[in-house]
Image (cartoon, rainbow, N blue to C red; front, side):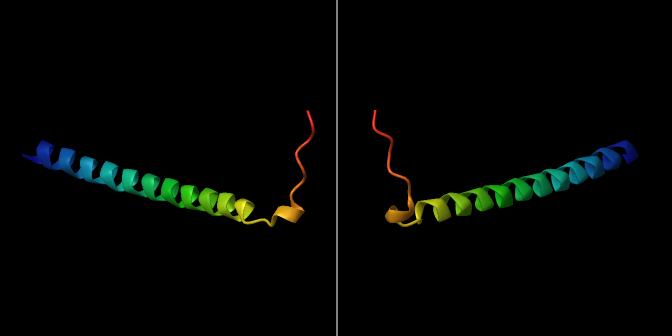
Length: 53
């Protein structure tokens, strides 16, 4: 029974670590999406014209 409890505690710790990792990734995704939106909002007259081919 003690071995089972140890395994359960280890699994709980691993789940907690995974939650923190996913939360960090989610935060990073949000930051990248905000930067992407900020780039798209730049007025057209500020953008460089496309180079002729």
